[in-house]
Length: 359
Image 1 (cartoon, rainbow, N blue to C red):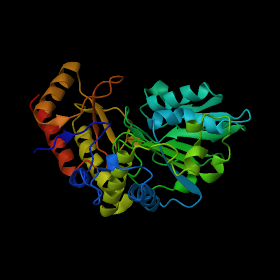
Image 2: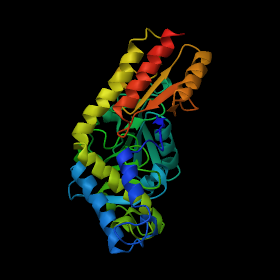
Image 3: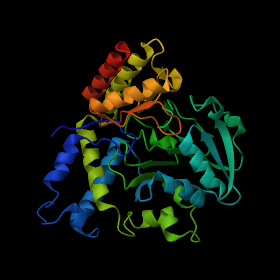
């Protein structure tokens, strides 16, 4: 069987060894005679998977005991609402930095719940850069500062994070586990799994324990972070198979050398494509400014719509999948998350060179 050259933005490519390991145990997990999908979430066998995933993530990101790791359904989009519902209390303000569509959506949901403030935005620049935020303008009543660490649609990424006196909250759905991270700098980190952590279906929330105290009993049970903390994310049936695959991906990340080694590989992959773009004399034009470029999503355009259509059609014939840019911006996008093999990136770079030479 030939594996696709999968550059989809999400759900994205998973490590082949992870898929093979899951396949081996699909019908019989650890002698139970059942798939993980069939196990009771109250069983000891599943509990080992569940707690094992938490422990592996804790080790990979060096998460201290001051934080809780929660597994929640609803994707990162549900967190757009849960965060203000839990944290915007006593007339406080939710502060946001806008760097793309997902931060816009997070702000939209927060506005329904409480007061908000836009601290900085690069919307006027078509989200081509990470904007400089004047932290002196942060509201004195700010409950938190929310950022999106990597912007899949526009191909921009935060290199360093703002140092603020309020809890820093980050949507890291598309770059978590891609590089070392000082978790202690954040009050809350959340990430949909379907880019770097596993399949869709589970969202990881890393929350400082003192923020859990802000929640109140008037919240709907399943919208309250305290519910997940009190019940080890097992108040109701969790997405057991997604968490099992998350556990396998985290084990794979350990075997690859951890986040430090993954960062080296991700930098190499990104450089392969950006070198082609920069060396094309304008034939390929990167959307993001160089100092804001993402190592997860490489976005670029060609001189005309006709050339873009031809590029994508020929790329499909060569076996490349998922290179279409997001419908809101067009062009092309290569998503090169942790599981993307370097060889696949090199093949894309060679195709890009060949296409230019024959045009």
